[in-house]
Image 1 (cartoon, helix red, strand yellow):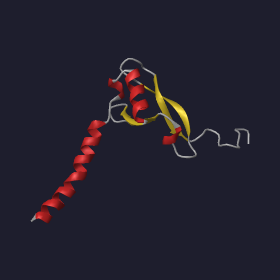
Image 2 (image 1 turned 30 degrees about the vertical axis):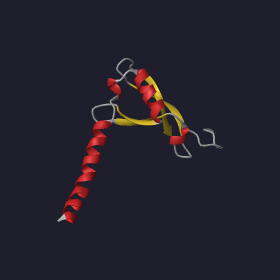
Image 3 (image 1 turned 180 degrees about the horizontal axis):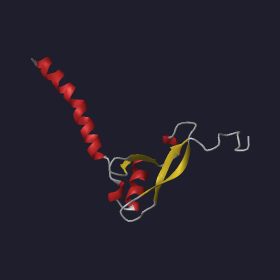
Image 4 (image 1 turned 120 degrees about the horizontal axis):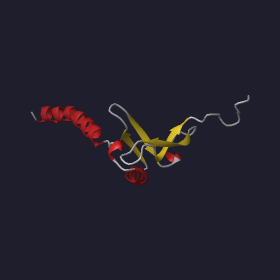
Length: 103
């Protein structure tokens, strides 16, 4: 009986964790620009809700990127600023190192 309860609890746990994580994602549109910037600065990387069905990850520095990625300023709409420079996003470089657009 005890094993059955443990198994049932273990199966239910992932669903609880997922719903809590989804509810915990901060909505960028409800924050001020300064609040969003401070949150990224404090946590290093934050996934914000950016629209009804969209979200995006904002990072504070390159340590959150893959080795071949670079930082680009990432803007978002906040409560007080339509185009707030919240933090950075990791992206593939436009022109890989050693190559130019003229090659």
